[in-house]
Image (cartoon, rainbow, N blue to C red; front, side, top):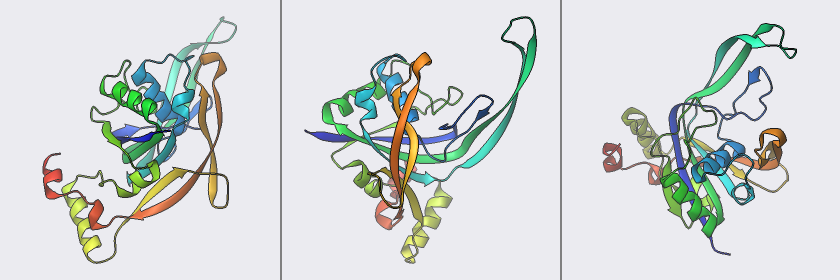
Length: 238
């Protein structure tokens, strides 16, 4: 089977990737979830909530954190919410967490025909695209391109997405001094030692039958050497 890898650059002021959200508490992970990314691709392709997402969920996923975000909390109150008996109303207090100022490289690996289909959807999305929640619109330059590298190789070799001059200059000095910064990466893995289970592999997004399965992830680090740093020309183009 021919395979390919799709690359996404997720750099936004706000994003949220809930994996354990329940009722009045909406959490966020510190990196994009598999369910959130599959949902984004399904929206791009115009797949309805009760549609078949198995080919998208089958993609292998790897994430590199190019800028660690800050987890923030938003306090919400919603008034005049009807009670279950419909005779009165109440006020609901909720907490919503999100990531501020985070940047990620996301690599998705799978059958070439499905990867290319997803890429076309991202170029001309059917539905609006969001970063986890509908409050956070995806950037227009989300889609970075395709590569023949595996997802794991891509997050280890692709140029750093950070373009802020001061931050890049410091990273370049650190690399020149032989003390490169380290970028955190999370890659799909088989169960085993030093592997964490996350319950974010989507099976169905249908309203009445939302279902998720476990996914195993290995966390590692890649040094930010000079080969990963953007060139001066690349910085100037952003």
